[in-house]
Image 1 (spheres, one colour):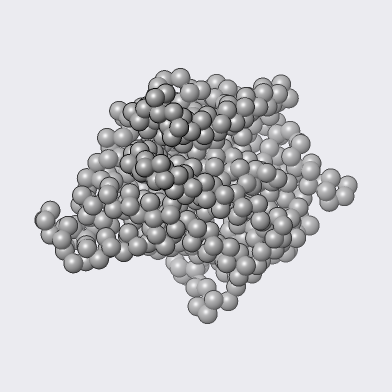
Image 2: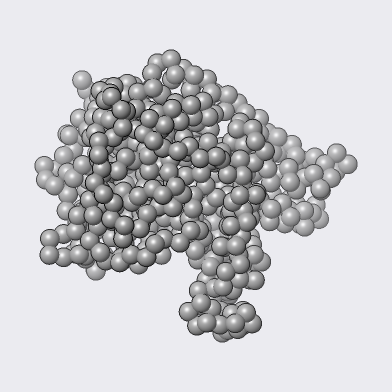
Length: 537
């Protein structure tokens, strides 16, 4: 078998069929350390964590002089150099290049039908030695503020044990990768694609009608309709960043940014490679994407964050994209994307979608319709902002624990953890409509268990399988949460109504919270950063 055949075979194998036991349950688990803290939604427990280094809680620091880390990827504790595999990866170069200096064990096991076949492919790139702390970037090449204060990638990355054939994920894979069900999934993916294309065309028609034939599209219809279309198309982008980053998908995945909130060039990493594998753990940076907003005095947050995001539309995102281009050049394009030719479509798509958003603003201004643009911008921005954090209990307080405490080894079932720590969202009550109106968060639990599926419709038809297998593990399938009535009030209270951190630390009253010199400085800095492209997720 040549290398191309070997790589291609990773995509076309069937999932391993686990040997069933009588109860369908995992073997007995060790008791949970009650002092460790736990994910929130349904009383889940913290996942397996690596042991601390002998005689030292903190791993040795990385070279302070900026010396590059070695070309190492860690899989099941062993070190690999996948540099030559970047351009060959059938799922796209991005996912290999971006996971350099990380433990990819969980990622491989949840995104591939047969991880054992993948492991055989990786063997040719083995360095023949175990991974060491110096092989892992302490902050995963992500902004440090997204992690807890003492976070370290080596120590704090959960290490789930996927070797047990009786785990829930294997039970589900056996059924969803059956030939008959795969055909159903392909049909639903095709239908999802067709509807997505239609929505994209309608998106332009709605704006054209408002600008040229307002008698057919008054502002009170235009604003909510275009907001719904932006959110729906962002949901399309949400699924596109989960697909193999190959061909034109590198360009089209950037439609994720059409709701003004994310930057897909960044989010494809943080969402797909950090949030999904490690939900509700210290690695899950999605928990903290909006915490910087909490630095602002409470009554400044809505207007200041809105102006901050307008800055993103006008200049900020372009500055950020250019910065990422420079970063790719400095870090080595080959090490990130395999080559400039393979990486260019990512940047083309990102620049294109943000140019579209800016052109829309300019056209509305030329038509004298800035306030209509601002109304739809405001509605889209804030619904999308709250929607991003609505499907998990990120606003809930974690039980106190010593951040420097040595982690405990705990054998947890990864798929069970995903179900216990995710919400399904409802908007109007129909799953297929809600799939778009919620930006892909309606079938959220299935999406977390099967993040490799290419569409929300595939998630929806897979729900019966996931629920049936989960019941055998004693996992409660909780009622979906309505975004507007169940989740939005709690999110508004957490993100908009609480005092700023400065006010809490200095015990400031309401007036001083808003007019303290440090608060005014923070507010001005927040505005400027938006126009400079800082603060994008």
